Structures are given as C-alpha cells and as structure tokens.
Length: 374
Image (tube, rainbow, N blue to C red; front, side, top):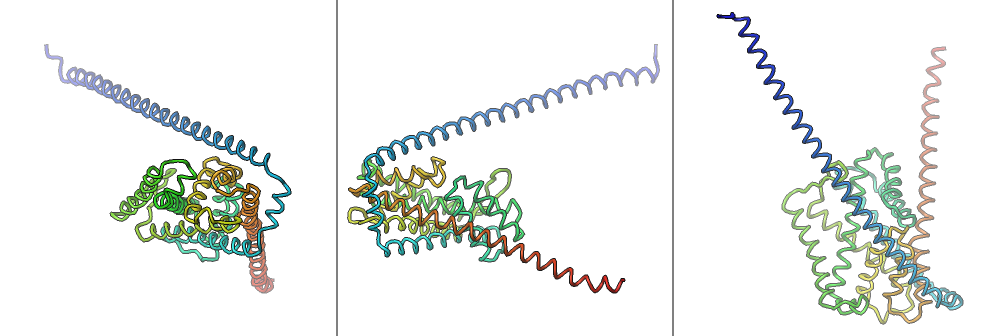
C-alpha cells in the first residue's frame, strides 16, 4: 500500500538525520583525537624543556662549585700584603691604557644597537642609541640576568623614542647575536692559529684545538653563506624576525671582534708582564673564561671568570694575577656601572624638566584664551 509522499519524506528525513548524527559523531571523535594529540605533543615539549633546564642548571651549579673550589685554594695561598703591593705596582700608564680600551669596547657595544636598528629599519638618534646601549650593557654586565636588566633599561629608553615592545625585543636579539659572533670568531681564530700555545693552557692536543677552531670559523662562514643566498626569517617567542643580510652580518662580526679584543686588552695591559703569553692566545682564553661565566649565570660571571683566568694565565705570582683581575673588575665593570646609573639619573632629570617646561608653555598659551572668555 502506498503510504504517500509524507511517509517517504519522513522516512528519508529520519535516515538523513541518522547519517548526519553519525558524521557529526565521527567529526567530534576526530577533533577530540587531534586535541589529545596536540596536548600530548605540548606535554612532551614541556617535559623536554624541563629536562633541558634541569641539565643547564646542573651544569651551572657544577661550574660554580668548581670555581669556588679554585678560588678558595687560591685565596688560601695568597698573601694580602703581596696583593696590596701588586696593586700598588700597577703603573698609571697601565690604568690609562685599560681605561682607553674600556672606552673602545663600550663604543663598539653602541654599534651593536645601531646595526640592530638599521636591520629593523628604524631611525633613532645616535645619542639615544648610545645611552640605551651603554647603560643596558654596563648594568647587565654587573648585575647579570641580561634579558631582565638590559631589556628593562633598553625598553625604558627606546619606548620614549617611539619603539614598541616587539621592536625592542627584536633589537635585543640582534644585538645579542652580534655579541656571540665576536666571541665565536675570537675563540675560533685563537684555537685555529694558536693551537700549540692554547694546548699548554687547556691540555688538549694541538690538532684537536685546531679542529675545533676551524669548526667554529666554518660555522660562521656557513652562516654568512646561508644569509647571503636569500632573506632568512626566524620565529622567536611568538614573533617573526628577519635576520641581517651579508653586509650587516659582516658588520656584526667586525664589531664583535673589536669589542672582545678591546675587553681582553683591558685585562692584558693590567697584567704585570706578557712575555709568556701573546695577545691572540690570551684573547681566546679570555673569551673562553667569559663563556664559562655566562654559563654559570653568576652576575658578571664573578668568581667563575676569575677562577678560569687564574688557572689559564701562566704567571708565577698569583697575587699579581689577582691584582690585575681586581683592577679589571673595577675599571671595566664598576666604573661603567656607576656612570650608567649617573647617566640614567641625568636622563630622567632632563626628561622631567622638559616635560615641566612643556606643561608651563602650554599653560601660558592657554592663559590669554581663558582671559578672553572671561
């Protein structure tokens, strides 16, 4: 018996609803599976990051413990009287040369920010760039935690010039890459061309030192080729950053080398005599000690840097080396730190004074208008 079109439509609609429900259920299960897979991947990534952080923390603690041990043994054998005599024996010419090289190093550091701003296609006056760069590095070198200390100082100054948080973060990354370019090039060149001399310091075979040095220089060369072929972009902390091309990268390497060599020269000229150690070997040793200081996460690498240099510098009198290290800390770290605080205070004072003058000018301009209305 024919049930009519109403029955057929109802039967067809019921089947369609069933099929739709099944598809919807399958889609829901698929989405749930995808969410579970994403959550598992995020959990795995978080677990790997946690393991990496624990390994890095353990490595930093191990470096710090070994450094404390070395410093403890050194200070137990040091005569304070001889240490005072060693400091007093440092000539005025040595201190003047150390101060000049400190100026050269921090001048190169201002170039880090200038190159980064050029890469970001942002115009900022050199006075602002120099202030932000000098103060951020001088403060972070002394207090440590550069991402927090240097980043805060940079943002405070550059935000007044109209730069947003993402621009300041990008600038900090590009400047940091410049810093590491200098370190890698100096230590690579030292290992490659002074392998025999450095083997007496790190007790490795000269061939191994040369191989590591060539590897470091080859890595820089490969990076230069990589950024030359076409524009390269990286994604860091959620934002996209274009890497500098060949010209700016060569500028980064050059500035980094000038900075590291000048900084190493500060300590080199403060040492009592240099007959047993040439400068290029010393510079590579200095950079390696700096890397250990960075890895230790100690503010300014204090303690770790000193321990590494005490073990590496072949000068018989430990009092002389300690005296040079203390003067180095004073000239390269403490004096710029005090100057940075003074410059920041003066900058804030001038800024407030300018704001006050602007407010007074606007008040004077509005006064006649108020009188006319009255």
